[in-house]
Length: 403
Ligand code: OKS
Ligand code: ZN
Image (cartoon, rainbow, N blue to C red; front, side, top):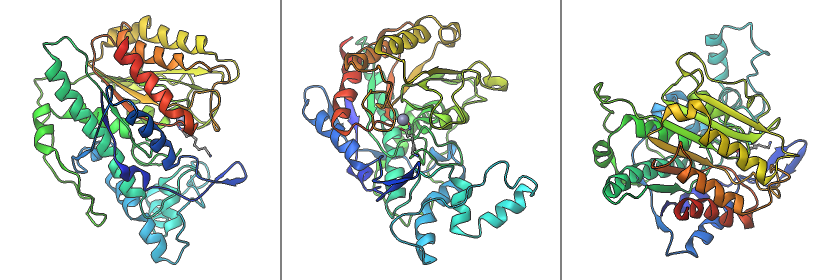
């Protein structure tokens, strides 16, 4: 299996975070990916590491607003230029929905954009977000890893056509993505890598991806203005239907939000509840308008959920759920978090203790009724048991390959 990876993902390395009244080393650290990469490297007969290509900002702009990307790209320098501390940019004052609600949103935005702290308050929702001089480089690289993995998935699907083999690729990237929506960062996430890949798979043909693909040469001074060919959305071909299976411990509020009104993307999340991000993840969130019914939240009690219970829920939704069966996805995207593991320092289901559960998750993504025969794109999300992550990731991928 191809694993798309870049050392540039390690450059985003904030020195600390403030969590529940305690200053501690940044939990979403470069060591996470380095540990997974080491484990992948030890199995050269199964995995091949490959470098990301560059597809420009155009496909990222299909998910995120231009002013938001401009903010991500410039905030660190703006902050330092104003004489603020160089260690990291963090939130000070957040634009809470109920605190400034009498002010005309246009006037509020005009005021907020005048200061770095105001901008952070507009575009960030929590204290896990910290910008360093290299944050945009790692963020841009992570998105290009997801795009490269999506491109490779279609290439492999084409190559495999006659062989009766199912394509799968792993995008090993950080910072993660599933808490970020079109215009707000949070939960260690800046750009929603999985959502960027989903839109890319829907809006571009393999031929267009081939044309767009360039060697990745990052220049931090590059303008964020869109470049590269615009997708031609041929009205004659039906839009690809994509099912996102988010197995990260946390609810992917960003991914849910991006596709909430969209009936061509079915979002399924299994997550600890109630827990971070505290305002979303209820089973009552079912999507809206055209998208109603195409958002499935499976909240699980972190104290009582065991390996069996977890697998039972995943099996039921992928084998028996009527909406999922009728949706009949063309492609599966797995938001692959590894923080369900019982020992996870910031998450974890108390009763999820068997590594073979991860093998079975991979097996379900291969052979369950709603997944069988569909290509799967694995995108790395959370997971913080540094020494264990490589094993957990590989068990999911081997479960897919060997089932
Ligand atoms: C500390 C916690 C902030 C982020 C927690 C969730 C990160 C994650 N205030 N999401 O999937 O793993
Ligand atoms: Zn998580």
